[in-house]
Length: 104
Image (cartoon, rainbow, N blue to C red; front, top):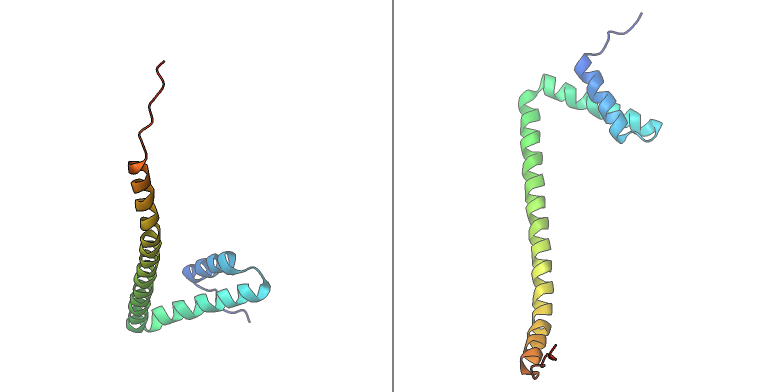
Protein backbone atom coordinates (compact mmCIF):
# COMPACT_ATOMS: atom_id res chain seq x y z
CA UNK A 1 0.00 0.00 0.00
CA UNK A 2 1.35 3.41 -0.97
CA UNK A 3 1.19 6.39 1.45
CA UNK A 4 -0.96 9.35 0.47
CA UNK A 5 0.94 12.06 -1.41
CA UNK A 6 1.98 15.08 0.61
CA UNK A 7 0.38 18.45 -0.14
CA UNK A 8 2.19 20.62 -2.69
CA UNK A 9 2.97 23.40 -0.19
CA UNK A 10 4.64 20.94 2.16
CA UNK A 11 6.77 19.51 -0.65
CA UNK A 12 7.79 23.02 -1.77
CA UNK A 13 8.79 24.05 1.74
CA UNK A 14 10.72 20.82 2.27
CA UNK A 15 12.54 21.25 -1.05
CA UNK A 16 13.38 24.87 -0.25
CA UNK A 17 14.76 23.99 3.18
CA UNK A 18 16.68 21.02 1.80
CA UNK A 19 18.35 23.18 -0.84
CA UNK A 20 19.02 26.05 1.54
CA UNK A 21 20.27 24.12 4.56
CA UNK A 22 20.96 20.63 3.28
CA UNK A 23 24.68 20.19 2.75
CA UNK A 24 24.60 16.54 3.81
CA UNK A 25 22.04 13.77 4.01
CA UNK A 26 21.51 14.37 7.73
CA UNK A 27 20.99 18.11 7.13
CA UNK A 28 18.42 17.43 4.42
CA UNK A 29 16.57 15.01 6.67
CA UNK A 30 16.57 17.54 9.51
CA UNK A 31 15.33 20.30 7.19
CA UNK A 32 12.50 18.09 5.96
CA UNK A 33 11.57 17.23 9.54
CA UNK A 34 11.52 20.90 10.58
CA UNK A 35 9.35 21.77 7.57
CA UNK A 36 6.93 19.01 8.47
CA UNK A 37 6.77 20.15 12.11
CA UNK A 38 6.18 23.78 11.17
CA UNK A 39 3.44 23.00 8.67
CA UNK A 40 1.69 20.62 11.04
CA UNK A 41 1.81 23.19 13.84
CA UNK A 42 0.40 25.89 11.57
CA UNK A 43 -2.38 23.64 10.28
CA UNK A 44 -3.50 22.12 13.58
CA UNK A 45 -2.76 24.96 16.00
CA UNK A 46 -2.74 28.30 14.12
CA UNK A 47 -3.11 30.42 17.28
CA UNK A 48 -0.15 28.75 18.95
CA UNK A 49 1.88 29.13 15.74
CA UNK A 50 0.98 32.82 15.56
CA UNK A 51 1.94 33.27 19.20
CA UNK A 52 5.31 31.60 18.54
CA UNK A 53 5.93 33.80 15.50
CA UNK A 54 5.13 36.95 17.47
CA UNK A 55 7.37 35.84 20.32
CA UNK A 56 10.17 35.04 17.88
CA UNK A 57 9.86 38.40 16.13
CA UNK A 58 9.82 40.19 19.47
CA UNK A 59 12.94 38.38 20.61
CA UNK A 60 14.67 38.99 17.29
CA UNK A 61 13.81 42.68 17.48
CA UNK A 62 15.11 43.07 21.02
CA UNK A 63 18.36 41.26 20.20
CA UNK A 64 18.76 43.34 17.03
CA UNK A 65 18.24 46.61 18.89
CA UNK A 66 20.70 45.53 21.57
CA UNK A 67 23.32 44.72 18.91
CA UNK A 68 22.77 48.07 17.17
CA UNK A 69 23.14 49.93 20.47
CA UNK A 70 26.30 47.96 21.25
CA UNK A 71 27.75 48.82 17.84
CA UNK A 72 26.88 52.52 18.23
CA UNK A 73 28.48 52.63 21.68
CA UNK A 74 31.66 51.06 20.28
CA UNK A 75 31.79 53.61 17.46
CA UNK A 76 31.19 56.46 19.91
CA UNK A 77 33.97 55.14 22.13
CA UNK A 78 36.33 55.02 19.13
CA UNK A 79 35.39 58.58 18.19
CA UNK A 80 36.00 59.83 21.73
CA UNK A 81 39.42 58.18 21.68
CA UNK A 82 40.32 59.84 18.36
CA UNK A 83 38.92 63.34 19.06
CA UNK A 84 41.80 64.52 21.34
CA UNK A 85 44.33 63.56 18.68
CA UNK A 86 42.36 65.47 16.04
CA UNK A 87 42.16 68.55 18.28
CA UNK A 88 45.91 68.44 18.89
CA UNK A 89 46.57 68.19 15.16
CA UNK A 90 44.27 71.17 14.48
CA UNK A 91 45.95 73.25 17.19
CA UNK A 92 49.37 72.34 15.85
CA UNK A 93 48.38 73.41 12.34
CA UNK A 94 46.91 76.66 13.64
CA UNK A 95 50.09 77.56 15.54
CA UNK A 96 52.40 76.67 12.68
CA UNK A 97 53.55 79.68 10.69
CA UNK A 98 51.64 80.00 7.45
CA UNK A 99 53.72 78.92 4.53
CA UNK A 100 54.24 81.36 1.76
CA UNK A 101 53.53 79.98 -1.64
CA UNK A 102 56.30 80.67 -4.15
CA UNK A 103 55.39 83.08 -6.90
CA UNK A 104 54.95 81.53 -10.26
